[in-house]
Length: 232
View 1 (cartoon, helix red, strand yellow):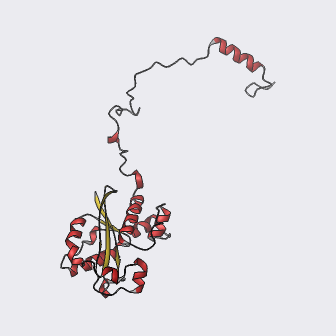
View 2 (spheres, rainbow, N blue to C red; view 1 turned 90 degrees about the vertical axis):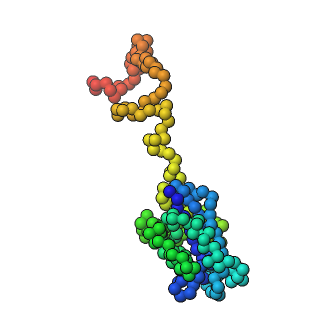
């Protein structure tokens, strides 16, 4: 199964108020494993960058001024996304900005049925706990020491690790099913379990010899009122 883990950076919180997408990072998973393929792009927002937003992600309007417009890379993005489910942290926020840019570029919005939100997953798995990306990385032992500021590709990479852990971790794909059993270990039809392919060996004798029994009796005779003897 192919899935896309993604994150965005923006000029603010509300695309309906004129805020724009300035960065997107996407990571491809197949069967819950990273394939090494990703899509990453910065965009010129065609507007100013509020100080509050720049403090979060560090992207200045000077840095973004020579970056392409979203519309110029929309085809590459849509080709990478395909029809795969899309996973994001607080996914409604990211979907809202991507869809606003798609509509502005004259393209259909993404179907919201593709959306998977790891915040909602975390609320079900850990009710009452903190559900920020930082808090969940700490809970699952994911190293985020290199995360000084928010960045779409970096956060998507962290989220990919988190999503894998939240959906079964490294146990997924290890081939523990019955179909992975070696051919040399056929499954028995009865409840006896697995039939070994090793050659049959006669059981070794384990009964005590007459000499061993005699020595044992001599040893027991030296004991002072052993518990298994009847009381006098």
